[in-house]
Length: 533
Image 1 (cartoon, one colour):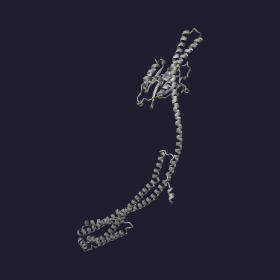
Image 2: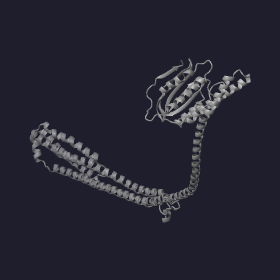
Image 3: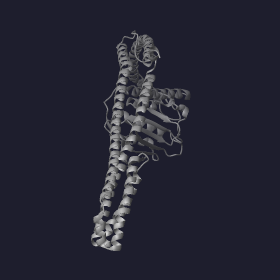
Image 4: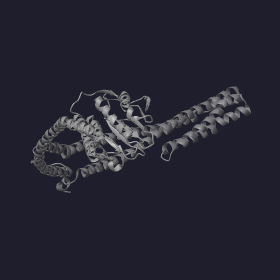
């Protein structure tokens, strides 16, 4: 595999190859370690569970034979059967220990098995040639004959038996030492395997760090420095990555493509910004001109309405003088013309007064104060007492304290409640309900009545100045009341709209800002009701 082909590998491919090689090496070490650990366990088992118990059984076997010899000598001295108890117990212990040793033996323990067979044959010979004849003589001829036979007997047979047991014990010790040495070697081998694995992991980690530094860290630092230069305003600087992984080289190309796109769009944005700035200058100039024009129009409306008052009063006064002085002295048509002139002059006076009031909203101000709307509604109902009549009912509940101009807020409710009383249904006592509810940072007010209502098609038209929905002789007024209401609400930073989904009657909603520092209402407000006198 050539160096060029390896250099073209992606970062993921290189890390995957490193992990694969590391996995194979560590896997081989793991298999070797598992085999070594299994052998180590077997060797420990030989030491702890075979050799040591066999050696202990050999010692107990020797003790059992000594007990048998002691029992025979005691029986020979006294001739009493109870002195044979050590001999009989030794026989039982002898068989038990031989069986234990045989149970620990495996097919590989040939030396121990051979020595054990020699011990068994010598035990049988000692029983046959020494022990059993002495016991038989004592039982048949007496203790004296038994003592004589013991004294005449040779101890060489028993000494050879003990020597055979010592040989067997030597073979067992050899097995134990060999198993212990093998376990020690396998333990050292496991330690070496762990050290080799740790060294391999450390080397692999170091190689991975070097790989990441050369293929990732350094190229990213270089790329970041190039990007910072572009971010500082050098949008024409070419970004490229000559080193690093193929992914980072591709990323550098993508970033450079994004730089070119941003540079092109930035050029367009600069051109557009120049156009926007020019347009903003034009709009600012037009806004200033419009503000000046509106101010001049308001001034003109105020001056015109104010200055028209005097000549209009003269016209109305002289028309009324003509009507009083010459009424009935001329024909009926002349009286009608004079009546038309008087009515037109009076209507013109009302229009000019309303226009003057409309133009004053926001121009002549006494400043905002805290206004208790519950108290304000009490004053409003007093002002409308003559319009309410005996059968009208005006109720409100839970009205808050807001910030505004009290005269304007009074005019607001006078117009709304007055309209509800004016546009009543024939033979139906008018009922007007004013409510308020908190909606975030504003209060929503509702003025609802049971009158003739407003058609949905006139929902926006009703708030336009001098717009009437009925004939002049049907209802009094100039059609400016709701326009004044709308201007007052907007002057206080609120909104107003007509709820067209209620029937019968009309429902008008408007909003006013919540007084600064007022929390959400948490208590019930007293409901107030005023019935016309």
